[in-house]
Amino acid sequence: MVCTRTDNAHEIVTMSHFLLSPDKEHLNAMKWIMRYLRGTTNLGLMFGGKKHVLVGFTDADIVGDVDSQKSTLSYMVNFA
Image (cartoon, rainbow, N blue to C red; front, side, top):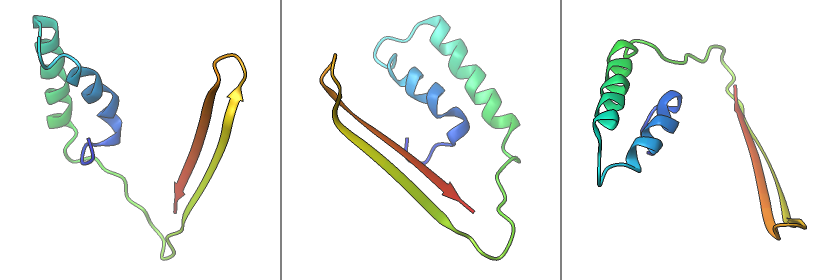
C-alpha cells in the first residue's frame, strides 16, 4: 500500500479483503484495475515552479464524540 498510486488506493484495499477466498466477480474487478493501470501509465502529477512548500495541519479531539466515546483525528497536507 505504501507504493501504490493514490487514484486507485481504495480499490486495492477493497480487493485485498478477498484474497483468501476470491470469486469470479473479484477476478473481473482485478482485471478492470489492471486494465486501468496499463492505460494510465503515462499520466502523472507535475509540480512546477522553483519553490516547493510542504504544509501540514492536524487536529485531535480526545473523546469528543460523547455518544461513542471515541477520539477523532484529522489532518491535511498540502504540497506546492
